[in-house]
Amino acid sequence: YQGELEYGRTTEAYSEALPTTGQTVEFLRIGRVGLYYQTLDGKETAVWNNESGSWQPLSDEFRKPVRVGLQIARKQAAPNLLMMPIPGPEAAQ
Image (cartoon, rainbow, N blue to C red; front, side, top):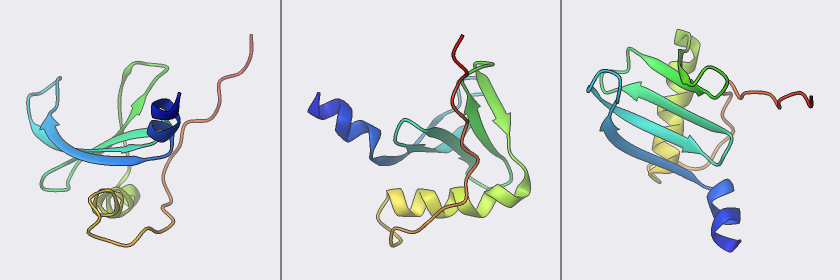
């Protein structure tokens, strides 16, 4: 259980090919709350949408927060508050 707890409160940044296009992008994982990617040129930013099972493009206002989040995860910047789109909880059925 310790591993699961740790995974849920950590951030991670890594480069990998996007499965849909094969393009190399920078991924940002924030605990179990959000998974984001940004292209290497910073022109495209997206968030994983669990409901649709696909990447949802984000508006330009989230380019900088994702870039800063990548820097924080790589310990290139001090931890700071990020204004990111976070999916809400699912309704009980």
